[in-house]
Image (cartoon, rainbow, N blue to C red):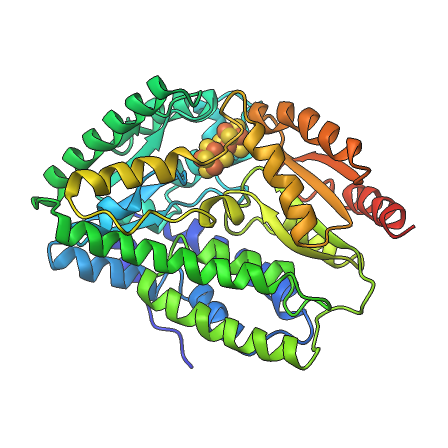
Length: 426
Ligand code: BJ8
């Protein structure tokens, strides 16, 4: 099928056309090498292949169309932003580009070099004019999670209006009160932006759409407990990454179709690996699209990733908003409670996270954990100590990795991961 010419749209959005062409070509090749070279993928993955191929085309066209109809597009960088409120006013919530080493020179003009790759990436994408999602957004919503993000949003705000939600750092009643206030303020902001009121009716609908998406991803995650693994970790990660970009209703339907096929595979004992391949949990910093580095190395070294303890994975999908709330106030409380459970390493203490890692190890019959921290990410790099300790106490092998989005250390990482897998097997 011939690709449509999206250049006029990209130009209108103010993208740097030449740089954007290069980006699409690099990403297209990486996708071919990493994804299309996998054997025996479920056929339903074709949907996600298509979404990826149109991530900067058709999907952006859809966003521009919904904007024309008076609806708003809100861009985010964190799973703390309650998308239910955005959906309630007919808006679209999209994740913004933050997963590739792009525009680093530009980013380093405004940020210190020793900033985590995710932050440098979102700044680089914006300053180099390469992310159509931020260009299409009516508002960017940031959050006070880690210091790097918090301070970087002040700079990003000079280039694009960035509204910042205050996220508490602890989980006491007082923190919950603060968080409730933040959610209510955000509700007011969304209402003003959209020029529409949030009501019990439209919020119920927003909650349902977001929960349905999470239920579909939970179903997919649950199927990965099977042996042999019916789907690669790379493909499952892709589903979790695309969840931040695609139309949620269409995405949910297609993930269920994928799950139907994966269920059939399990019945017929069809797997993507041989029995006996080490089952790995990747835990830590989020892997934003197109950050596939660690699972790619693991899965081309003879192991399989069976779960991601990460915001692009389990952490953002495991909790639902209680749907039994009747009034608007009760619904807000249900949203506050759901988001308050997120166990990001920005919280202290954060024992829920280590408890949860142990649960995942048990439920997914994990043989070893790869703890992934983006270099210079203080919360996850420091918390790795606690994670290592609880796993070692239970005799579960762990490999701690710190890396950025560059490819220079791939050989070295592969050597370390292969040595780890040998040990996991033994
Ligand atoms: S809820 S994990 S999505 S903050 S990698 S920018 S923490 S220095 S991304 Fe995150 Fe929300 Fe937490 Fe999840 Fe900072 Fe670390 Fe960089 Fe990070």
